[in-house]
Image (cartoon, rainbow over all chains, first blue to last red; front, side):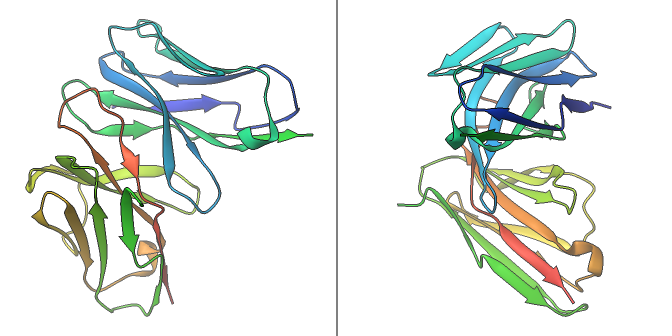
Length: 112
Length: 114
């Protein structure tokens, strides 16, 4: 059974720092991995999707990497801003399905 | 325009009642989903539909019955509500089934059972 874990559970940093959020999964037979952010009282916003054959994806200040064999993904946030404060969730899609299995989330606070 | 919209946003009701949550997407997507986020913020898939056909049913009690009248709508009806049903329910959609497409989420329906 696939399990997805995110470390750390919470993170508080000053503005401007570069951050790394970690995601690990127990079964390497994934179809893709997605990173989302969730703002309080809101739904999830898709940030990056990495297909199982890819190693990384970039969007603006965000970079996500995937090491399928070791069951790990990292989300790198460069030059963090207060507007980055949110909960970040990773989710893996199992082989050939759209079923997403979510991690436990990292709650990020960036203070001015 | 909101891409994935859910109604109502809040739902407070008594145990034993029957209630429905509606979801509509205007993205032209083929696949829609229902997720449940519990009090610990853990998110878990309940159902997915592709072109009005049920694809995923994740061992959800049969008190929960999804219905997809067309590709743009996926509703969730819940019978005999229980205290444990209190949660936030999210609807989502994606462009195609089994494609590498991100899922787009609504803002959620916060269900509270008294």
